[in-house]
Image (spheres, rainbow, N blue to C red):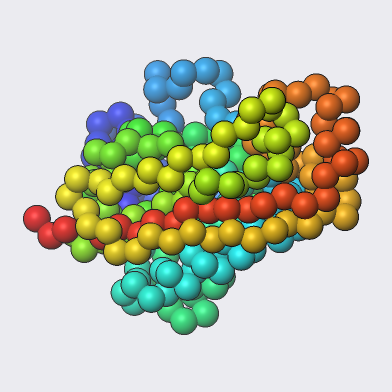
Length: 271
């Protein structure tokens, strides 16, 4: 599945490395992941979300607040996926959704999962979380995979390149995206901004794809522990907008926050 990020030739596994015919080699970490992000393609020393955001997100998601989202995505994919499908979780972070979807979808099939994120720390966490999934450090804008590699790509909040999505998804393959709907986390916005605005629901259909399904999922999240709400704040850009004192005030005064997601499924048209 892997294409060498330096010369685009196929990578073959040799012992604890991935190697191409031009002798470019990439070590497999002890956790099982491989780093296919060349140094020259990095825009910073340690790209991706910072450690505070990752730890907060991992702690928040592990409490199950977004489990209804996992259920909705899983049901949608089960309806439309073929047997033995190959799936890529783009911008997979610490692997929460990758692992959860693999567990649910593989109760009725034998699908193969890959996860990609630009953060080495996040991928290390993901590989420890689920060793059976092929996790890779790579850029969503230069994916180390060949054309038409995947039956489905899952993109939850992750930025990406439209041309790369078209390139790696097979004809008749699926693109499932999740983005904030109008009132997602609106109570936090009200606590932080003087004039909070709703999210725009302007999910676009990629050129060369057709829309299969578009739906919203909304439900209240009840918080009984301030630390869970603080983790939600710190895993989002809201964490940059307020100091520690303001975060503590939010944790003590808000006990309900609305989750509101826009879920879209597209299908790539045959060429």
